[in-house]
Image 1 (cartoon, rainbow, N blue to C red):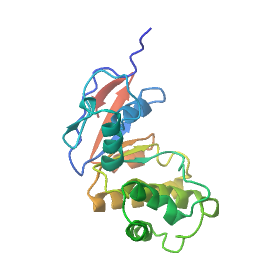
Image 2: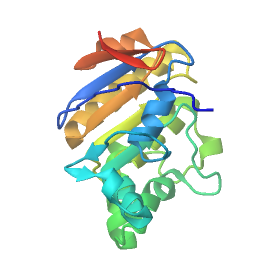
Image 3: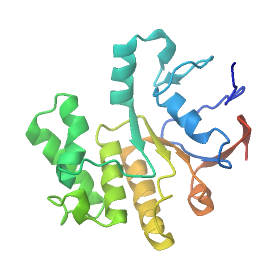
Image 4: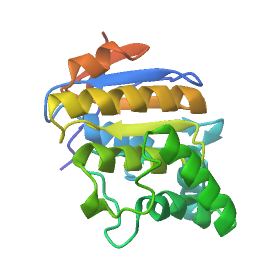
Amino acid sequence: MTIDVLRGVDLAIAPGEMVALLGPSGSGKSTLLQAVGLLEGGFDGSIRIGGEEAAKLDNDGRTRLRRDALGFVYQFHHLLADFNATENVMLPLLVRDLTEAEAQARATVLLTALGLGHRLEHRPSQLSGGEQQRVAVARALANRPALVLADEPTGNLDERTSDVVIDEFIRLVREEGSAALVATHNERLAARMDRVVRLHDGVLEQA
């Protein structure tokens, strides 16, 4: 049996554009982000990132495109517990064969820009929830991705902390020149995006 989770979705995001994706639970928001993020297959249609057609790539090519062109921020930070903040941000850079010194310098710049210059050597367990999420934002932007995919990035934070993370996320994404697709229930976050689209029963509507 085939279940259509997404139907007729047509979405183009311009370089540097920030788009909010709204919709009730079960509407397909996370599925859409997983599809765009090349984390799930089995979809009919076309996904093009930075001029590259994902369907024409083999597994290695898709892995390269995901590594080089995409950044991910989730509701839960998914930081490695045994690594400090700097080391967590360095990981995607080392995978791209930067030297340790280059990776550390880039991680330090990002974390300092997010107000975490005094937390560089702290492990996730030593950080607050908002600080953990800011480390996750830095990690997502480490490779200067063309597109950041964020799935409920403030969903696990209280309102005050959420506002701080929103401010830092938007500022740094814009400074880095990345585009962003942000799935959220947070209307305050959505209102600060360049554009809002809504998913309802797998159908995408311009808000």
